[in-house]
Image (cartoon, rainbow, N blue to C red; front, top):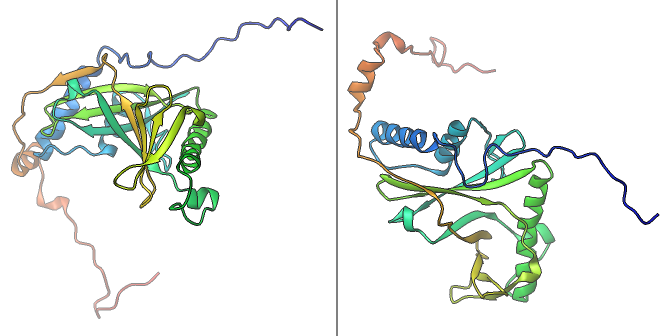
Length: 256
């Protein structure tokens, strides 16, 4: 039989919004989250897990930190990994370095040593570990993305963008050792630096181009809420605190 069978059209799952086109209310809600964080902490500290939780709350997704780091945020058939990058001018950042876990050929392939390996052979193994992780996540979700928050040191300016989390064809890259004894992967097509792998610790980093179209916001410095103000606002009273005995009257600790 030469012809392929005709099939009924199956409606494909659509993500909650197109890639890198955040919902209209996203900027305002992100600003609220950052102002609250600055006012309550009094210091411009925002770690990776903070960003995961904030993003999940804004888009109405489930925050469920994972070991792989590619699906920490889930909404139906869309999953996100989340990264934070510090930059002096978030709205103008051109290239970003995304630390993406530990890729160990010693563990994954049983290699005894990497110091004498051919760099292209070693780089292909390092990339294969990444590709295997992405393939496993893509088998579970129709859309897999990385959402990146670029933040200024004072956290008063940020930009946000999304990238598709993809499998990279190993034949598209060549690898070599740099002057710091780290392995670098560059595109064979244009010579652009795309990956760095550190043999000590096996840390794998992706170097990505930040899209020109991105969400960028600037905040006014909020006043800091001191402890006394917060405690008064919630009507704290000493009877909220109960001392729990840790042993019997003779000084022996209780045992299970």
